[in-house]
Amino acid sequence: MPHVYVVEPQTIFGPEVQRIVGEAGGTVSAISPRLDLDEIIEAAPDVVLLDIDYTDYDPAEVLDALREEAPAVRPIVLTSERERGRLDRFRASGAASVVSKSADDDEVIRDLRLILSGGSVWDERVEAA
Amino acid sequence: MEQGHREPIRVCVVEAQALFREAWSAIVDSADMEVGIVVGTPDELPARSYDVVVLDVDGQREPCVTLIRRVWSRVGKVPVCAVAMRPTLDVLAARTNGDAVLVLKSAPPSQVRAAIWAAARRERFEQAVAGGV
Image 1 (cartoon, rainbow over the protein chains, first blue to last red):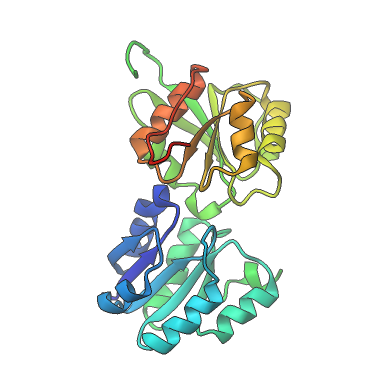
Image 2: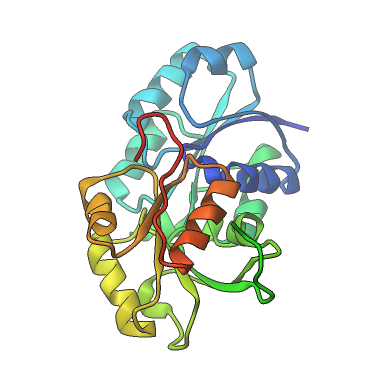
């Protein structure tokens, strides 16, 4: 099972993210409300699931840093963001996939299952904006 | 706090993030309260009565005070429990005005339920977090 490090600032939804990752076939190795690059590098997960909404950092810069310092980790962006330019920036910075929070849990589980087995998802809700 | 009531209070949730709509039952459902419906925006609320509306203000396109007015225009002046990542001026204003009880998303589920309960009973609620809310 792929090990997934989750960054979910909305701690109230942490257990739900854990459930979704589990149903998609992953194992949550850690879940944190804050982004800590050193902690992620030390945890050496297969995947980092980053909820980039409501954070104090620039997600694109974080993706750049992850690509440089932990190239083996596949970053997945979880967001309600729909602006095309921002999505392109995430892709250019090395996001393996973008999953939309506008999708319901069944859709996200399906997408994550594909991503965790090596595929890539660029949610059409984001692309269509 | 949650004693002496036979019927659980009926909770309606407004949650913009579709991904997290299912999560609310796990957070709220208990002997004293249960989620009746979860919708994406105040305008999607069925026009019927609820004991309390939980309003996740994050991800919505309007200020908290406007959202509360929209809730009231749909279902009458029901108690509102606003849930937010951060205590922004807009959200704090809603609490100061007495329009809503406020609880942050950093609270454990037990505190969220306590806030919902307080809102339903039109009582004050102070979240136990460092520095207060």
